[in-house]
Image (cartoon, rainbow, N blue to C red):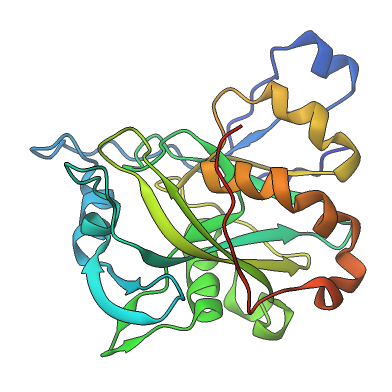
Length: 260
């Protein structure tokens, strides 16, 4: 049974598919507040998201994940005329509660990259802050706090397990895409959630034995990085939450394709 965490202001809707109802799966839940209506910018970008694109300074890296420079988040995700995208450092957090259920989110429709896509708990970037590169786990805690409202004191840095790094390229919609060396982290613990509706429109915890049946009920696509891990590593990690450090490969950089 999917465990749902609902706030007082949360909107609830029924899953429309009869098959899913016969499996006794509960409703997905919305972020606690509807996203604020903002005036459009010249480029039809949400102003809040546009601000992040311009002010967040990401870390450019080479193919060995060596830090070689900086660029704005906007520049790091813009697909060039030749199809190239700047290679930069990122992270993806797979968050499980103590029962072993996995937290999923649906990206807000206001997101510039991959709006309305479903994904793992948190995917973002360490930044260049105060003239130095931000640590990946520090960045993960910052973003989980920003997107899901998880209190920092509920996210012990020692509980984040670096599993591997993945070098992948995805052209997105041809305007905005991804080219990242993605540090994959797993965190397991029971945390309080109060989602930021500018970032997340839906979220839920999914048990392992219901995951494969749950995916076809989603009302949108899944992000390429989540799909990539789903295909190549998720089952191995989910089956071995009790001994993740034994199977982790944090020093390796894998190359997986993002195709379904």
